[in-house]
Image (tube, rainbow, N blue to C red; front, side):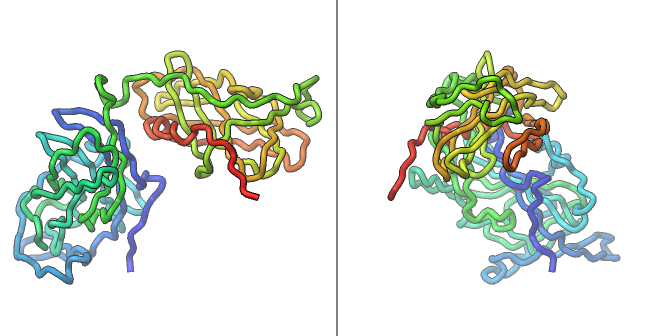
Length: 387
C-alpha cells in the first residue's frame, strides 16, 4: 500500500513566510505540506476522461456520497506561481505521490485557507474538503474561528470534481478575520491536507511598518552575557592546546534542538547565534575564521568576528556537561530584501588534540524570518542544578 510521505528536500515541513501584501491579499502562513499517495486512475472510453477515486478519509464512515459534481474549481497556473521556491518536477515522486500544499491569507475582510492540489485525473471522485469541524483555534486567547463556507460550494459533502489532469486547483475555506493580536493558530477539520490540529505561527507586521515581501525593519544590536576570560592565549599554536585562550561563565540558554540558530539584522552587521552544547566540563571550540553567508545571487558576506571569543583560533570553554550556550558570529550586514541565506563553514585546518575535528558544514536556504523568530530562544538562562 502506498503511504503518505514527507520530503525534507522539498521543504515539506512548514514554510511560514514573511507576511506579504499583493492585490489586497496578506499571506499569514503557508506550507508545502505532505505528499499523498497518488490514487490509481482509470480511463472512461465513453467520456474520454481519466477518473481517479480519492483514498478514503475519516469522513467516509459518516457521510454517504452527496452526488455533487463540481464542474469548475478555481485554479492557479502552477505551484511555482503561488510558492516562489517551489520545484515542480520531482522525477522520483511526481507520478507516485501528490503534493498537498496550503496557504493561509487575509483577503476582503476574511481569513482564507487555500488548499492546493494537482489534478491526478480529469475527474476525481470521493473527495472531502471540510465541514463544521473546520476551524482556526487561537490557543492563547481561547477563541475558535469556525469555517463559514467553501469555494466551490462543497461544505459538508463528499463530492466529485472535474478539471484537466495536471491542473492545480485551489479549494478555499473562509473563516472570520483574525484579530491582529493573533500570533498562532491550530488548524482543524481539513483531513486531506493533514490539518487536524496543526499549529501555525502567523507572520504579523510590526505596527507602523509596511512589508513588501520581506520585513523592512532592523533589529536592535543584541546583548549577550559576556564570558570571563580566565586564560589569555600566548604564542598561539593550533597544535599546542596549552597556548589556547580559555573562558568561563558563558551566555547560557535553555536546551534547544541541535543546530538551532538565531539572527539579528542591524545596519552595521548581521549577528548569527549558534547553539552550542557542552559534553564535558571543559571543551574546546573553533568558530568564525572563513565562515561565510551566501545569498541566492552568489554574493558572500564574510565573518568579521566572533563576539567575546577568538575569530578562527581554537579556544577552551569551562562549564558543566549538559550546558547549552551561545556563540555569536558577526557578519557583514545583510540587505533587508533577502528571504533566505546559506551558511557555509569550510573544513578547518587539521590540529593536534584529542578527537580533533573541525569538519565543514553547509546549511542551505535558511529562512531569515525563522532565524529572526528564534531570537527568543537565545535569552540568557542561568544554570539550574539539583543535587
